[in-house]
Length: 233
Image (cartoon, one colour):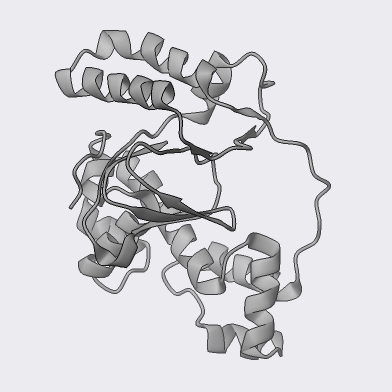
């Protein structure tokens, strides 16, 4: 969940674009492809909460265990909800951790969440399947678009269209997303930030830092420290 304090942010979530303004909340379901970027490069300030999906389901008996959490209304412009989010942030800033579970549970109960409708699995396009295979085999050496087009015997435009149809993302965005998800698991495990960027396949720390912030609205260090993110200017 994200809360915009100052400035504006363009958020792309599951193929839908949202323009976030002060007072807005954005709810991003688990594993939903997303990115957040400042509007026209201008400064923005925000808070982020990263909540464990299993814990969230336990607080919402209307969502069956094991079901995917859906947010049919990702962008929320609701003053009481925003105030409730800010109360959670205030507790974290004060270090009042014993009060957090109850306050978070209240916030979760107020959110428009539901169980995602089950969908019949569909076989991905062979260009997408090839990209998934390469990412699983060697994430740091992810294939370029030229290489992917050559190996799948398709035009680059066709590859982009096929991958986007299957995932909602371009091949480049999907590769970045896979690298960021891998980086998040290693940061949570306590690996050094410099090592994580290299292991995930980023050319240098600057590229890793910039991409991580774009996709998570937090710096790698902030994410590793599991802090609420605010005033990231």
